[in-house]
Length: 202
Image 1 (cartoon, rainbow, N blue to C red):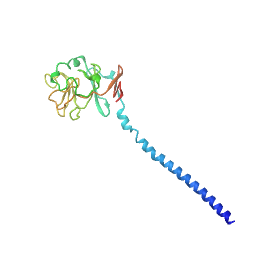
Image 2 (tube, helix red, strand yellow):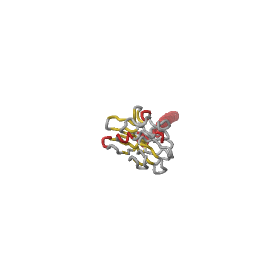
Image 3 (cartoon, rainbow, N blue to C red):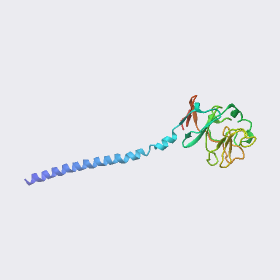
Image 4 (cartoon, one colour):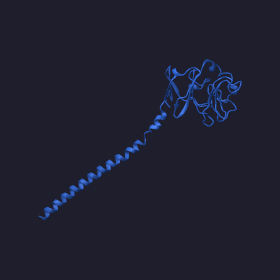
């Protein structure tokens, strides 16, 4: 009788041990999953980071000749100027007054490394922060607006840097290089896509 009681106790202990072992394994596995989720989530870029990389679209049909729009891409103002034929003509003739007339030391995609610093003569696309200390240059498009020989362009009110209608910096300006040109493309004749070109999204 005593042997049967010991045998029954051993079976209960064995069942209890199996249950506890299984419960411990299940709890450990569940804990591992819960610990792994935030770890894996941390590899994914945040909503803010994803938003910063998203290209910005601009409807060019709403931009009149001679006007400038200022959309935002990656938290930076983008200057989009619809240049008139007169504005385009005023880009030539003052290369000797510029620090980097051929944009050899400035930041732009290959398709903007030309005297107009753009894909087309009509539309200029620039990152609208001064390459000196990051202020916002003001548009001064009228010829002679700053001084008699002024061809038109941008003037930075913070420290006096001057840029022409292609974003090229004049000698005597604190800024050392031309205004930056972001990657951009024209998916169709009326749409500008800032932040994406043939290489994809920047």
